[in-house]
Image 1 (cartoon, rainbow, N blue to C red):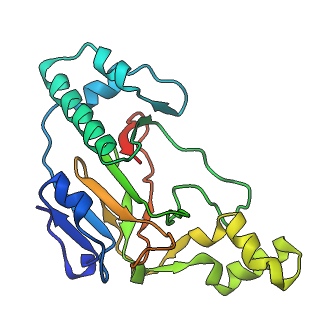
Image 2 (cartoon, rainbow, N blue to C red; image 1 turned 45 degrees about the vertical axis):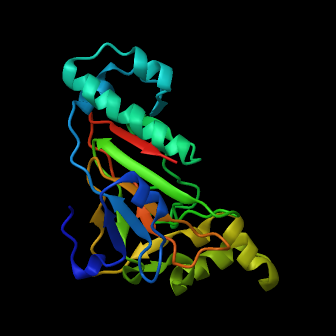
Amino acid sequence: MMDLSDAERHIHCVTNFEDLVSTPFSGEINAICWSRQLTGDFSEVVRKVELSGNITEVEEEELRALQLSEQGQQARDILLNDLKMLKAHGASPVLNVISHYDRDNTYPFFPTDVYSFHVDRSPVPVDTFLCTYYGESSDILPNSQGEKKVLIPAIRDHLRKLYQGGEEGFESFLSENFFDLHYQAKPDARPISLGLGHLWRLAVDHPESRVLPCLHRAPKEKPGQPRLLMIC
């Protein structure tokens, strides 16, 4: 099991998939972790995949067709089983090999790419599932350690100048451009790495949610070391 400190009390750990998907978010808990120690060589899977651009989606048929060692086959079996479980739950998992995500340079003072702490939003009840099998893993941040960027006075002033419209449409402008989804870590913040092999379920901002959405971000990848990530 993962060693959780008081600062991580918004995380609940479970030991199986059924508890991962059925345990409700409540109170401060907006991240649930199926803590696992996986076997197999996931780096071999990454090496054998034919890459296409900075993000390569690995289809199930391609995964099955890879010629792998015994350790690579163990890793593949885990990946196929995770895909199967998530699909049976009604999710739409995607397995990606990621060298890097595109950076957002539209507004230099306010990037809205996934390297920034952000929350996911949906018009319907849904959760975000993710697992990093190889490479750098994602981070989450306790909500108390993040500040919504659009509420920071200096940033809000920049956005008002950018908007150049009436007050009545300003909030819609923030939402339509996804500015309101992004957060800045406070000076004493302690981001939490999601680690390798653990399957996570994160709370999303949707109309029926009873908890705050989980703040998370993609890591900065190491050169020459792509990530193997399943997400939905």
